Every structure is written in structure tokens, then in C-alpha cells.
Length: 143
Length: 326
Image (cartoon, rainbow over all chains, first blue to last red; front, side):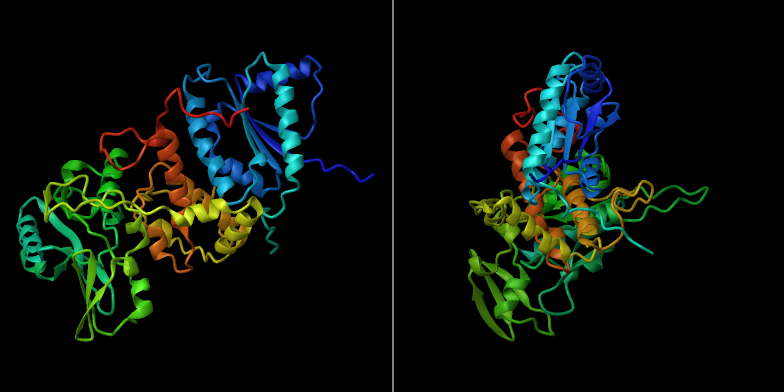
């Protein structure tokens, strides 16, 4: 049996909801795939679209961004801005031929440990179906 | 278009005490070229033209001017800048006002209703460029070309620039003075360029853009010619953190073009300057128009129509689409 492809997924989680939600999933011993590399940001509005581009350039097979539900943002409106911005980024990536399954966004609150598990499973499954993403990898410059 | 009326108006404006100069077009030195022209006194207006060759967007010069520090004891020059604008250029001015990139009271806008510009590259396929400048004017819907001493009528469909085929606002949306009669807006053509790419499958799209982005020589012309790329500290230039490396390879070129297109999302007024100046012939307009289309269709927003509007990416509505969110 050939080995299954294990995608490498970078997740940007907001400090106040999704990171706490992932923490809750951990403390509740919820089992979810270990393909996620979490980067904590203070708000999903902090996620510069270049973070996503850069993650893909550095070899991520997928990117997941998660923040508070609309209206629950710790900074009142950060996730509303993120929603607009990342929708455009998703459209743009899709337009240049990046598989849309590589880019996922979700709202996970601090009490949704089980939703976090589902989101991660979905993101991993999507990225696995999309396959390895090597075409965009940053070329190492040897001096 | 009555050139005398334009020159008269321009002379009136540049001779005002509170106007520094007027930015317009003049004939280029050869072929189908029109050059930007800074008129500083009333005598200079004789060279001013407005013809189907004046395709460049002069609004870029409003923010390109170097702001040198004022020597001690001297007052900064507070005089206004006058600018000739077509429909698309006026949207750039509006967008600059929205972003507070320029001040309205430092600007005199001369609006010129625009019946459509020619793409000289299309024209040159049939009538190669000559050493002497070529005269072109509008004749009804078509273009009248004075080429090697003979008058040739070029059908509109044959030479009209792509951005003008897609144009929705040929009349200036902001102006202090308007020269000429407003033109009847024409039905914008369907954006076949974007639709063509969208019709491809995901790997085909990647292959298409891989070919296009690999041509990029990273001259940054697209950024420099853009009237709305005016950050003094551009993220594409920044070394710490280096979001986009200087190396010219496919990965960095793609990151560069994604960043450039994204920074114009909800701001691009589709003047087509980036694509026009690109020496590698990358269809950058498709990226911009794709995003502009999304913003228009899904958010009902069109940049550059209203100088009082909220900037698109710095505002939100609670009911924005979120069907893509898990």
C-alpha cells in the first residue's frame, strides 16, 4: 500500500476565539489531524494576504484562516475586514490557477472545540485531494 | 473636439496666479506617440492636443511629483495643479481624493469627454509607424488617420483600445471645467479576456499564468505608471521583512503580481496603464478586471465614482458575502 500524502497546512488563528477554540479541543482531548501548523495572530484582520502567499511560497500545501464569528470580534470589526479582504484573495488565487481547496477560512469561537476538529478535518481532506503544491515553492538561491 | 477651445481654457487656467502648471498631452516625436506635457505659461498651450492617441493617464503625475523639503524660512508652494482628465482619469482623481492622496483644493480638473482612444499597436499592424508624427482625430464613430499625406478612415472596431471597449464612464465624473459636449456612453463589450481565462480548468489557468508571469522582468513599470500605486514606502520594495524577493523567477514574479493586483482590489479604475506600459506584454488588466468584477458584482461597489465614498478595503457591511467560509 502506498503511503498517503500528508499535506502541510499553515493555520492563522485569532488569539481570542479560534486559538482558544483549538486549545479547548486540545484540553478536551479531541483527536484531529496533526497536519496543521498554527500561527497565532491577534485578530483575523491581522492576516495580510501576503502571509498566505508567503506560506504557499514556502511550501505550504494549504492555508487555513480562522477568526471569531462576525460580531464577536475582540476588536469589534477586525473579522469583517478580514472577510472582505480574504474573499478577494481567494478569488485572485483561484483566478491564477491555485486550487481553491488549498485556501479555507472559518469562524471558530472559543467554545467550539468540536467545530475546530471538523474544520481541520475538512481543510486536511481538501488539501490532500488537491495534492502536493510544489510549483509555487520559493527557489532557494545558493550563493 | 475643438482644440482651440481647449487651448483657450488651458491658457486661462495657467495664467491664473494660483496655478502652478497644467498637465496635458502634446504630440510625440514620431509615429503614434503622444507625450505628457507640463504647461507652465499661456504661450505653451499651443502645443496642447487632445486626440485618440492621448491614452495615457496623467493622474499618475499628481502623486509622482517629488516633494522636496522646504528650505528654512521659505513657504511651501501652495499653488494648484491643473490636470486634463478623460473619463477613466477622472475616476483615478476621485479615488485619490477618497484615499486623501491629493487635496481637492490643490487641484483644477479640466474634464474632457472621451469618445474612445486608439491602441496604436493595433493600428501599427496595418499602418506601420512612421518617422513623422501621425495625426489622428475622431470622425463620427470612427478614427480619421492622416497617414503619409493621405486621409484614411479607420473603423472604430479595428483600432479601439481594449480598455475603451470595456469603458463604462467615458465622461469625466469630476471636473471644474468641462471642454466639449458629453459623449453618449456606449454599451461596454463583454470582458472576453477574463471570461476566457475563467473558462479554463484550474491547472490550465496555472499554466497560462505561469507562462505570463515567467515573462516578467520585474521592471516595476506597472507599479510606477499606475495612478493609484503611490505609497512612498512600497511593500514590494521593502527589505525587512522581505515579502517579495528581488530575484526574477517564477515564484517571486507570481508573488509580486499577486501583491500588485491585490493592492489594487477595490481601487483599480481600469485605466489600463499597467498593461499598456508592460514591456513583456503580460495581460495585467485581466487580473485587475477580474477583481474589479468581483467587487462590482458581489459588493455592488465601483471605485472612483464618488469622491466621498468609503475606501472599499477599509470598510465593511455586516451582510457581506461569506458563503466561502466554513
